[in-house]
Length: 495
Length: 113
Image 1 (spheres, rainbow over the protein chains, first blue to last red):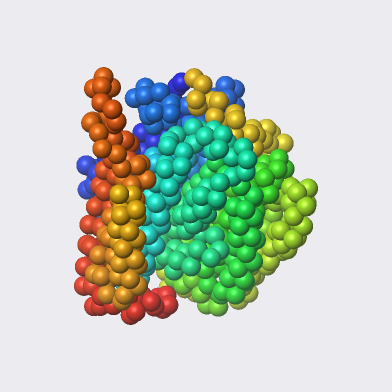
Image 2 (spheres, chains in turn brown, orange):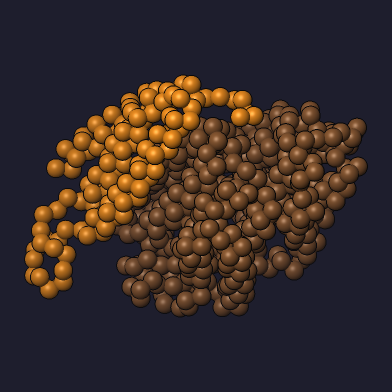
């Protein structure tokens, strides 16, 4: 038992509260926010090492023994995700300093930013299904504020839709938890898993499949899988680049994490539910690819790439063998880093050109070579060109798919890589090559300072790919826990 | 008793769905309120409706009510209260800014405003 694992939740929470009182002093806010962000990163790094050496860490809040109280659990999967979240938050923060504008900074942007991290880190760390709902709500409430902050017409319009979709999915979450509680009589995730295991000796009861599908709908709405991604291209289009980055890189991944967690921990008996997951994952890839290729708007192209990545990761999860799960965890982390970098880069392009329509952009690389080449590396990494980070993850997922004799899915995943490459190269070729033009917002755009954050992320992602030999033991440990729910249950209940 | 509650929940859910499918923003918000009421009642029912004394050890009562669903509902009510309040303010602001409360007129694909 260690108090360490609550730090990534507590540090942003206290920072958020302090920042509310500092709302008119922008420099003070920035200093506090950056120090707390670094603190969270260090704490998250220490947790990863601790989990690596001592195994799964759990904390019974207020010393109410599991399964009666709320338990926080940090296995390798969640510890790694918390670490990556902190890194992305740090990058978004330094990007925000130069781009978000004084108006937003004065109206609690950094405070809400930190509350969002409370929700995300909490959702990754909690070991209690109702507590997961609460952290989801913390995260969503902050995301509503971040989305609408600024109050332009498009933001207000899209916020309403986003809010409505999420209110409905929250209600369904409560319904799913209620059903689950009536079947197993507990809320602790490890305890739920062991009880489901007991009642599934002679096959899984049908009601559990219903619950599994309900969870898939709830988390699928957040994670934007087919056919539940309909709200995403509109809503993610509205906010400014750092907020879009947080949403695209973190919020959808919380949905993916929750699907992975519940399906591998609760419903691993249930082949019907896994069949549905496989089909939806493959369809997400297909429809995401169609969207990414069809659009001529750089924001939309990257947004549709989120859907493809979610499909690929969930396909890896749904095959459920060692290779595919290792690949899914590896790819999930890669995707968070590289999507964050791409969104920030797209943000810079839009700051320079004042438009996101690819037809009105060209020749950026003559005057912004740094931006161009960073984008190029990020694009290659996204498509999975070796030795960059996307390659290892996709390779393992495809290998797992073929081992699991799921040939169609493996084939589609492979094909999608090519088309993803096409969709991002389209941005590179049309936007960065070609005739040099002059744009409106050019003089005041601090491109060099803005480029720091995405450059850090791309560098980390490149190291993540090149150093995969060194990182794979961590990933394998994460996949191991996902494959053997018993490890998780023992760590939580027998302490 | 559980059967009766199931009907009440069903009516709440169907009313909520009907309201949320309408075009007026205010009706949609009322719909979300009803939807969360239905969900809360569902938690209460799923815990099993039992009569009995308060769930305190040593009371020597024959049956206890289940305290957990009540705690969950309390949390869920507070959350849905907050979200509804936010939603109402957002709707009012959107009405001022966009000059309409008809969601049909809010579907816009123009990207440059």
